[in-house]
Amino acid sequence: MKAPLTIATVLKPQGIRGEIKVRALTDSAENLKAFKTVYIDGAEYSVFSVRAQGDIGYLALKGVADRNAAELLRGKEITANREDAPDLPEGRYYIVDLIGCRVENENGAYIGEVTAVTPAKTDVYTLSKDGKEITFAAADGVIKDIDVDGAKIVVNGKRFKEVSI
Image (cartoon, rainbow, N blue to C red; front, top):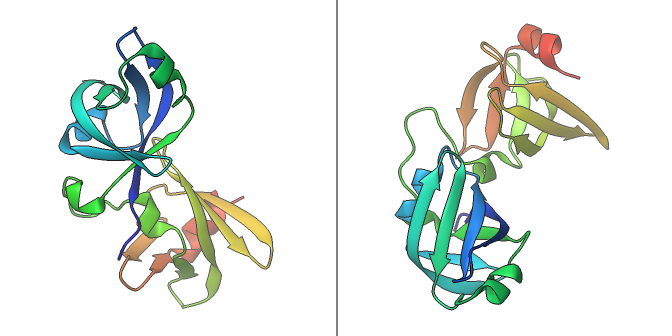
């Protein structure tokens, strides 16, 4: 079974009726509307409503009836079941599926293992190899192939050297 998806982080309570303001960790807060059930610290919450503005969402959850209850969720991660997630377009992947992938160049030389992906206009990958960290921007031409099922990412060696730190 694949890991649940982390879909948002609770920023703060919104208003006095228990609504929470969240930063979506999806392409858009609109994607949060696909989830009918979410989890925060292992507790299950039914989603009553979602309002979206860019990467900010406002969620009303069953069991979070007032500002005090919402305040207890501040800073927590919101996860959801993968099967509830919208389908991704071709060539797009969930970050959780990239973590742990082996990264190598087109000749098969091992570069490192993905430990983190920071979403940005050009995503930044963090790799670990022999206790050291390597970061690189996924700029045009760097990543040649991603095989999530095989847990392997192939990069263009020359472009990788240009963008890695």
